[in-house]
Length: 251
Length: 378
Image (cartoon, rainbow over the protein chains, first blue to last red):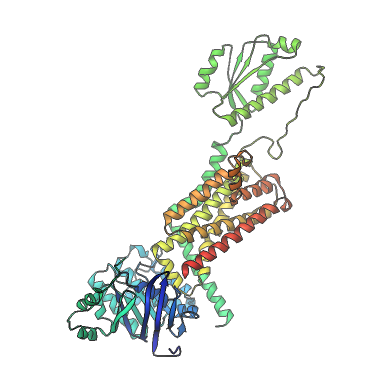
């Protein structure tokens, strides 16, 4: 594994997390290229969230290696945190703050100066078409808007990688499509996108996907290669084929 | 990265966070009400309603004697600011119905031949009847009547030659008029600060966990310790506002002046506030829902403050297990500090022990919090 690798954003080698006797994540090895949209799939309880928490520096691995944005997960968490963005499956902006207040709060904790912040937040608000809503409380916005705003805030500081934990849960298909436009824009600007999802149609939008079963990676390839491999037309079949063998039941 | 720029980042983070926290507080009407309504209501409530001072207490006098001596004593009782004579009667049967109507708190009965006994037998009797359902008030009223009677007997018979008569002269130091306010102001201060710092901080931190925003904060480059500190800073400031409100109310509305050094009072209050904040932080780390945090703060902290700090019930009268438990209630020590500094006007030399205990508690609480917090992060 080479920390100076400029092409890879995420490299893991036999990354493992055990809680007592229970192995939540079992020796996963994967590489994610810079600017790639990487789909991280798996049934509930397969270990996705635990794996993602390790990659974000929220949880220390039990064994294995991982280099995120050029820094080791054991020693470089502080450097990693500066270079990643994160959007959790629970909606993660403050509902009792206005759009602009949320944007400047998150900009502030990422250490942006007020002049940087001014330019960035103006660009963000124009991109989302929210010019007339900046003084509205986030709580009063429809869910789709909130999700888009949360994503834009997660990439406000131009991270190298953005981790999205089931970002489109409960959102209608049209808004989901718009949300994915934002993801493509981010990817085009060189941000690596690491996304977990339950929607298998979304998996098709990814450059490559991995499917986790029982804490391990059962498959990792482009969506079209996976479909070829399993001799099927839909991602659903690939997923069910793999998930059927799971011993763990969902949480 | 060089130190100056990382320092400016920390300052930026802290500033953004504290500002955000103020938005939360100022936009939540319920929080505002608790923060600023509560101390005012508490102080006024304790000051004017729950006081056990004796002032204008209505009494009934059954004057069977109807002689010069009894009349003089009745005039003396009525002239004091403590008692108001509801009416004078000669019929003892009136006592109970009047008590039951709630019109009076005490009855005084002068038996037949009161003056005669006083002048010749030297041992005239007066019966004092008080309402035993309110023991504290009954005792206090009793004491006041007794002292008026004693005064009277000394005045009326100054030349009386009685050998070995001991007349205790009772003086209540620091609170000579036995006012309620000097007693409860320190208690209310402990209670309000406890409530604001422990409960508000715990709930505010747990809310971030519940909403999922805590995870976002922990993924950010802001150090977890700084997250917790910035979460507590606004409540530190708000507690000072509360403290000032209580002190101003007690000085200007209840006429309880700060006898000791105001600087000492404020700095030791700051220490207590920090103790409470650490407690709130510990609770927030140990609980996962706002309800649980609120419950833990109320049951675990507020009740002991009221019951065990010595503010409502004297610690000396408690069974020893409770006395032992009262030692770990921070408010017990703060209560002593405020009483000593604010009411008695004592200096640091008389409260250094309590101060040291609070410092120790704060360090212990913060150490436990840090440890638990690290375990949860792993």
